[in-house]
Amino acid sequence: MKFTLYVAPLLATLCGVVQATPSPDNALLRVEGSITQPNYQQLALWDSAMLDQLPEYEIKTHTPWYDEEKTFRGPRLSDLLAKVGANGKQLTITALNDYSVQIPASDASQYQVILARSINGKPLSVRDKGPLFLIYPFDQYPELRNKLYYGRAIWQISQIKVE
Image 1: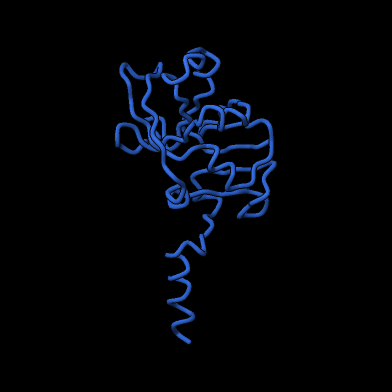
Image 2: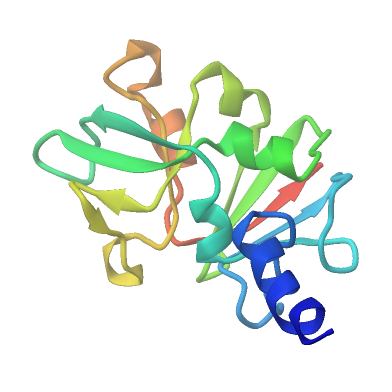
């Protein structure tokens, strides 16, 4: 009986069967709106460990915020949206300081944008535009090198609303 009470939940967690939901106060990212897979009331709350479970991708690109090409790594926004069952056409992405941008949900798959968690192998801190920075592959798609798409590359992301 002690095995069932103590070891079985641990094994289930280690095998990915059970994923603890972070509290709203401890969540790194909050996804709301038109989603079908909430994990807390009508929200999908994500912490760092949950984001670690998503495949990680790399984008090497120049941006207006850095003098030279940088390597960004993180999960694809499209993977996160699939996990929460997002079915909207527009995303409102909000930063820690309540600044927000609206982007078409199609940008996630069309350009394979990532929620960068590191830059040149170093974790993004709040001071360095983290913990999450929406990065487009600006060098790969010349049509992205303009104010419209640079404006969509929001940093210090804390919330995504699917509409």
